[in-house]
Length: 315
Image (cartoon, rainbow, N blue to C red):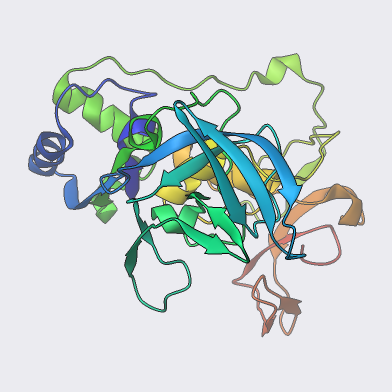
């Protein structure tokens, strides 16, 4: 399990270095396998503000972005489709060492100013891949609106990710909160748990979920959430998922993955408009029954298989 040092401190104070932390947790039974320092190579990369975007005079697929980062005022030539005025971005200056997003193997390159189709590009608005945060490089990385312009990206976003080997006897630690509980005990620090969802404040449908195989499934809980617009997740969420090794998809998928990482409780979101009965039924499979799984494969099940259905078909 990959644990972001910054994220962890939402739940418990860690007042020792990442290296000492990893050693003490290993001695306590949570083996730290790997320590990764994110941002160590981000010299000459700053938080920039996009002041304006205009069309490249000689290239339909390129734009000119005027970006401010403290005392630096640069023109950057980019083909990123998602760049827009008012965004906060990761601005790399000349001399920055970045990952080559188009190389087949891990390869770094030193950024140099140069003309692109006749216009001097003095820096680069970086993608997540170029910074080593994820494999995403279809567009630039957009930072939170309150990111401090001119700040070193290393100071703003740098982190340490520690990968733990969670053995079967420590499955309770397979979440951020679970790790935080262990840390609280080992370092004798106060534990801060996330806010709880108060069921009494909401009108609930007692018949939303029916369990027809209680010997295989003792509990299955569902809630209906309305008024959702599916869109990209905010930067803070995609950043935390990426550091945990989870690829961001959209706000709906991402929040279920986030809560799973935080609490250790697996979740799945269903589109209720596609649920024929509007309800969930948990039952045994029937001999010879066939279902299409998430990997789009047709599989045959039997009575020993537990299915989540809409009362008729698996969902």
